[in-house]
Figure 1 (cartoon, helix red, strand yellow):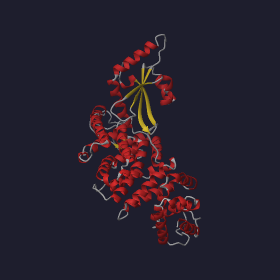
Figure 2 (cartoon, rainbow, N blue to C red):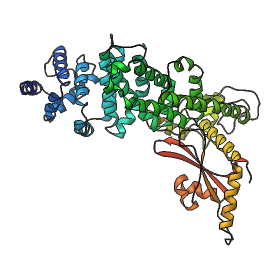
Figure 3 (cartoon, one colour):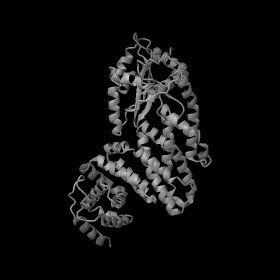
Figure 4 (cartoon, rainbow, N blue to C red):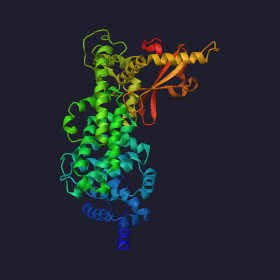
Length: 494
C-alpha cells in the first residue's frame, strides 16, 4: 500500500512545474488550489503513520517540493497552505530527519521568508473558526523546529512577535479550565508543551524577551497549565504526565527569580502577585507551587527595595537621562516616558529628549544601533533605569557585607606584607542564579580585564583603590553582564 501511494506521490509532484520562484504569480502548474488542498490533506493524514513519513524521507525531491510549496503557498495566501502546513509539520515531527530538512532550508531559502511562513501559520491558526487543537500542535512543532535551524532564523522569529503570539495561543488553549475527554486533553497538552518549549527558549536568551512574555500573561499561564494538568491527569495517562512540561513551568518561574534583579521584571511580577489568589487556590503542593511561592516571597521582599529606590534615589521621579535636564534638581514628581526608538532610555519631557538627541555625544547613535538590533530580534542592551536599579541593589548588599569585605582586604594586605605597592582586592558580586541573595566571589586581579574589557578595567585600576567591585548580572544566555567600579565610587568607605 505504501509503495503504491509513493508511486502516485512521485507522479503528482513531477506533473507540474516546480521551478517557480517565491515572487512569481499564482500559477501552480495548472492545478486548481482546491485540488491541491485535497491532495495535501490526504498526504498529511498519512504522515500520522510512522511508516509513510520514513518512506518519504528516501525521496529528497519530494521533501524539497513540499518545503517549496509550504513557503510559496503560505507567503501568497493560498487556501491550500493550511493543508501543506499540516504536511510540513508531519515531516518535521521525527527527530531523525530534521537535520536534512534544516540543511535544505538553510542552503536554499531566505530565513526571513521561513520565519514569515511559520508566524503566518500560527496567526492564521488562531483566527480560524472553529479552532482545532491539532493546528496548535502543528504550529508549535514548526516553531520549535524553526528555532533550531539557525541563529538567524531564531532572531527572525523573535522579531516577528513570536513570543506574543505564542503566549496568546497558550491562553486560548487554557481559556476553559475543565476536565476534557482523553483525546482532546492529549491534544491540548501536546500543543501546550510545544508552545511553552518555544517561549521558554527566547526568555532564557534575553531579559526583555521575558518582559514581553510577562506582558502577555506568561506567569498566569504557567499556573493555569499546572491546573490543567492536575484536572486532566487521568485523561492524559501515564505516558502523558509531561515531565518535560513541568520542567518548562518550573524553569519559567526560576528564570523570573533570576531576572528579578531588574526593575522592569520585578514590576511585572508584582503586578501578577497582586491578583494571584485566584490561581493559588488551584495550585496544589507540587514543584510548580513551591517555585511560585518562592518567587512570590522574593518579589514582595524586593518590592520594599523598589519603593525605597524610587523615593530616595529619584525623589519620587523617574530617571531623566538628559544630562542637561533642567528638572534634575526639582522635587516635583514628573511622569517620564521611554524613548520610542530603543525603549532603553527615560526622559521627563519631549524637550529633554530633543536636547539629548542633538547633543554630542548624545543619544542618537546608540538609539539607532539599538533600534536596528531590536528590529532584527537581537539583544539590544539594558535600559538605564534597570541598570541603575541593579547598582542600587549592589550598593545595599555591599553595605550589608562590609565587615566581610574589610576582613578580605585585611587578609590580602597580610599576604602582601612585603609588597610596597599592594594590589587591590577584587570582589565579584554575582546576581546570576535564582534566589534572594548575592554570591560574593574573590577574583584574581589578573583575570578581571577579560570580564569587563581592557579599556574599562585600566580606567578602574588607575583610581588607585583598595577594593574594586565587579557586579555580575544576568543578561544574555551564557553571557552575563559585568560592571567594575571602585568601592568609593558608590559612596562607601572601608
